[in-house]
Structures are given as C-alpha cells and as structure tokens.
Amino acid sequence: MGKLFTSWKMGTLEIKNRICVPPMVCFGWSDDSGMVTEKNVNHYRAIARGGAGLVIQEATCISKEGRLSLDQLGIWEDEQIPGLKKIVDAVHEEGVPIIVQIHHAGVIAAPESRVCPSEYTCVHKGIEKHGRELTVSEIHEIEEEFIQAARRAFEAGYDGVELHGCHSYLLSQFMNRRVNQRTDEYGQDPMRIVERILEGIRRITPETFLVGIRLGAFEPELSDGIAHAKWLEEHGIDFIDVSYGFEFEDHREKPEGYPFAEAIYGAKKIKEAVSVPVFAVYGIQNGEQAEAVLEDTGVDMVDIGRGVLVNYSWANDVKDGRDPGRCLYCPTCMWRVDPARCAGRLLHERRKKEQE
Image (cartoon, rainbow, N blue to C red):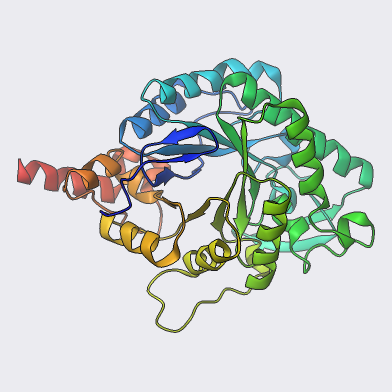
C-alpha cells in the first residue's frame, strides 16, 4: 500500500490515511423527528474505530420537506444539535475527523409537495414523482436552510459539511441543464444557488470549518462536471467528492478498457483540472483496488462504503494484511433490512473464524 496509508492534511485537518467512509443513509433508524438514536451513535463509533482516516455522515436533511425518507436524520432545528453532537463525540474519541453531508432531495423527496428548479417529472424507484417549479423566494428560503444547517453542524462540533450536489438531489437538479430550464438568474447561472450557500456558510463559520461538495461528474456531460469543479475551486470549495449526478439526465462515459467505474474516471478527469482535494468512489472492494485507483487517478482519497458496512474494520484489516471481506451486491440489500443478516458480513465472519 504505497499511498493508501499515508497521512495528509486537508485544511487544518490531520487525516491519517486516504480512506474515507462516504455518506450512507441508515433507513429506519430514526423517525419523523429526525433525531439521532443510540443506534446511529454506535454505528459511527464502530466506523471510526475501524481505521478510516475520515468519516462523512449520511445525508442529513436541512428541512422536513426535503427529506428523501421520512425517517431520515435531520439538521433542520436546534433541538437536533445535542443528538448530532453525540455522533461527533463518538467519532472524535476514536481520533477521526467527521464531516456531515447536508441535503435536500428536491423532486425525489418523500413528502408529496416536491419541488425542482423547473417543473419536472421522473420515475424514482418505481414511483412517479413530479416537482413544481420553485419561486425565487422559496429558493432563498432553501439557501438559508442550508446555511443554518451548517451553523448547527459547527455548533455540534463537526469538522465541516459536505453539500449534497449529486445522486439526483436538489443541488444536482440546479446544476443539470436538462433539468434546470429556468430563465432567471438561477437558470442563467446554474451555480448561483451553490454560490449563495457557500457565501452564507463562510460568513457564519470560521476558516477552519471545511465546506466541500458531493459533485456529479456527468452533469449532464463530463465537460459540465469539470466546469463545475473549476468554478467551485475558484469560489473556495475545500474538497470535491465525486460521484454520479442527476441519474435520469446524465451521460456517463469512460474509455474502452478502463478498469474502474465511470465515476472514478470522472474523478480522474476532475482531479486533472483542479488542485483542491478530490475523492473517488464506486465499486472499490479491496486494498489493491484502492491503491490502484489512487495511482491511476491522482485523487487524494478513496471512498469505501459497502466494504465498511460489511466489515467496520475494513481499513484496519487492509493495513494489517487481512482479508477485509466484500459486498456481495445482493438484489435486495439485507444490510439495509437488518445488518445481522447481511450475506457479505456473515461470509466474512465465517471466514475469520475458519482462519483463527
């Protein structure tokens, strides 16, 4: 592992290796209140203890109207801060920094009153969802909700926030010209909403508080993703965590024979265009693949998601030369239903016992 376990700094943060646990929503663990439960706290404590250099907390919603699920964690009111602080303290006690991803689902939100930059209809997970066009005053309200969510994150002790700008959610809807058909300033400049959110967060948090973004590489084309990344660097973003954007209106690409996913290729091309830290994700199963992605792309961190769900100690096991296990990509993810019934986790635990 030539690079995977090298330490580095992002802003003032000391990060012990190049492994990031990306945001992964734990459905059914909270309720309509969006409050943190002990199950959430124990989950993030176990992740941090597993050896990763950075943890990004699951999509945590800025408003009840913007939830992707009615049991999603929330950061829309001050009463949620004490619970969020429990997660922060649990992760920090293991010597690991934590960033929280702040989120609004837009047209694919769970509540019935869905919104979008422009009127838009899509089918998401078998359900037709229609979003009405936001008014300018409503956009300003959402911007302020993002800003206040960042304030709460700072007060809870997080090391920063990640704006959720991909996976078909609201900010990616603004950035995708096939979705955003507005003729006002928010259509003529698709980054306007991000600009105002960034400016607002910077006004109320110290320079040491990181502000990054989960950015779609293909929004809708790779050239757009690269242009967005360059704009973000010019406007002071601290890191860019690359994934897929608005999935119904994107064109994914990679060269024939490229050994990794399109999202990783997108991260490579974005890293070539900017100097800020860039993260890559998708389908990285073991230490050798993680190292190969770092070498091929030049990115600063790799996101290990499913592998960590299968085995909280993924990073420690890779570092010590042990088999970290792997996700089996079951048609129905049993980890989401009941982690104790995850086939990948059960297989890994059985093999560990056989080797003891």
